[in-house]
Length: 151
Image (cartoon, rainbow, N blue to C red):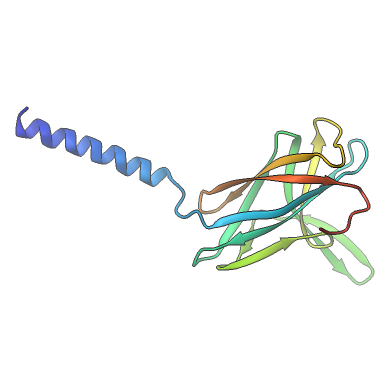
């Protein structure tokens, strides 16, 4: 094999290796724990709750959630003003560096709509969490009764 051909092949392989590296998440610092879903009857929206952890040196944003069990999953936040509360959709939520952000009743939560089947208390549903660093984390979320207010 000629030297020019060897250099061409080395450059080609190096470029492929660089593309594979560039496509990988910048850091695998995010994780999710304590995930659960409040089961409500019929087609009523369900609430999803969990703890998002960031072991990295920089904040990372939770930018989306998906599930094959629901037609729609959105990040929401409950806002309290005096004696009234309202919910608003949020595009992303920052998880601090070396920190944890809890999604809990009365605060940040996932609004799960259009269930594809009836949820059964005691079962679990996978949710996939997408972060701004390109990382995706799938967690198994326990289905709990409508009266559940926490872990």
